[in-house]
Image (tube, rainbow, N blue to C red; front, side, top):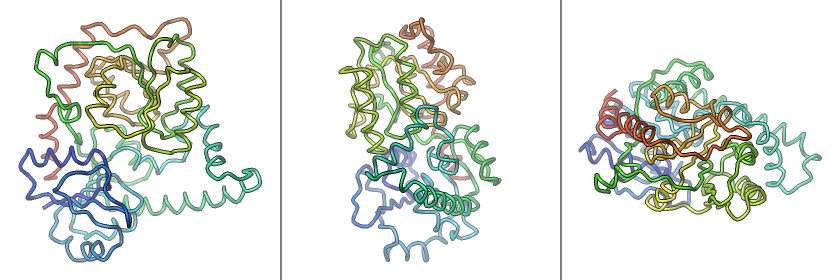
Amino acid sequence: MNLHITGDDKFIDFFIGDIEKMELTTSNDFVVYVREGRDLKYVKSKRIHKMTLNSAEWNIFFKENLEKYERVFIHYFDGLLYDIIPLLPSNVKVIWCFYGNDGFLYFPENYFLQKLTRRLSLAISDRRRGIPFKVFYPLFLLNRKIFLFTRRVKMRSAFRRVDYFANFLTSDFHLIRKKVGLQFKHVEVTLASLETIISMEASSQEQDQISFGNSILIGNSATITNNHLDLFERLLTQDTKGRKIYCPLSYGNENYADIIQERGREMFGANFIPLVNFMKLDDYNAILKDCGYVFMNHDRTQGAGNIIVSLYNGAKVFLSNQSGIYHFLVNLGVKVFSIQDDITVGDSIFVPLAETEVLLNRKLIFDYFNSEKHEKRLLTVLNV
């Protein structure tokens, strides 16, 4: 029997849907936790048990019900769980389903930030507090160091209880395991299939059609690790006139989102279109299909879903050559481009991929992320 613990995440319904499709619901329970007074925003599944953190129901559940489970799956290693995970019974296997940011929080705050974004990071703190930052900076810095040290201690204590690290990027596994200095094992898993993500309902003829949208997609969220400003500067060397520039900012840091909207409009004018509201999957996929050029300037794994769908759609995808997913795709044989190496002054990057390159990318992406392979990996991790 498996227990899945997750917050209100927009991807968990996909995961539960696959469990239902594989007829494994009787051996998998899902607890979705929320803060007191909060309602669910993203999770719609009826298969879940909603619990308020630290409520009587929550405490009783963790004291009296865990012995019946052979495995506990942590979907996103939330700081709200750091104190709970070390208390899990020793006979229960703990599997960390790695989503990205949850592991990289262990690294220094500026570890994955590029030059211009590093400069911006202090300005965000300044704007948030609305105070003379120079006066209070020493106290802020001290409190911040204490907070980060305490968080790292709690994280490492929770990580000690992990038996398996579940994701599809071995580079992330090795990077994080080395950083935390622990010996949990790796198990390969994809948290959703390609078909689930892009909702393939079209006819086979429509699926085989290749259309190159003229628009641009930048980043996946209002998180500072997108390194938006560094990418904006590189794109100023290119002619972007006449192209819509979509920039998803619907979740993350609101202050950062405001700054990116302001700078984006300053640099690219009316062509810059920030996406600040959460969109239905079909509507978002329609925008992705219009974006023939996709730029993800993360120095760590982030936005994997956007990247995979964009490649399948035939987009020309540019990634930071520091990210794990860039090297994963290169090793897979996929045609992707480096933001650092392939955006050069004088050479236009807005030349679409050849049809043969698109078809090869599509085949390689489908071969790895298709539902049959996904369900096979999922079955393995559910019985690890």
